[in-house]
Length: 113
Image (tube, rainbow, N blue to C red; front, side, top):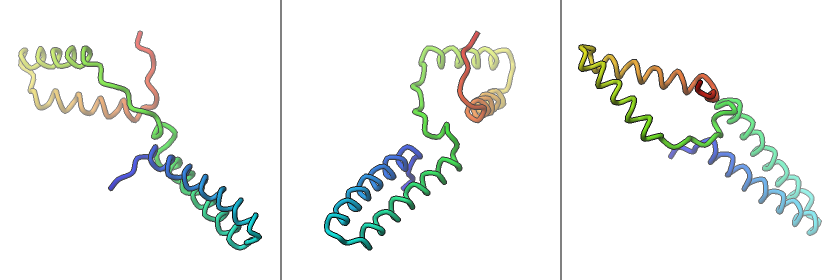
């Protein structure tokens, strides 16, 4: 089962909240070793979050936008026009896929002119 970066963030926050509660309750009960153990668990969880952020980058935590159906229909019509004028449909769709992938790796979207 794959866990998204946002899922990892939520899990780390839950582990940290539980660890803080554990540290407080352990300290009240004068169980210093247990309090330190909860602190180490929290530190490991934060370390995991830092690692995930370093691997996926800051854009990995952004919500994906919804599909603009009108824009998708326009692009599909453009592809149809290219194919009807003699272009190879498989090649055109491959170029579109490559362009989408390039856009995803280029960073946050900019306003269109």
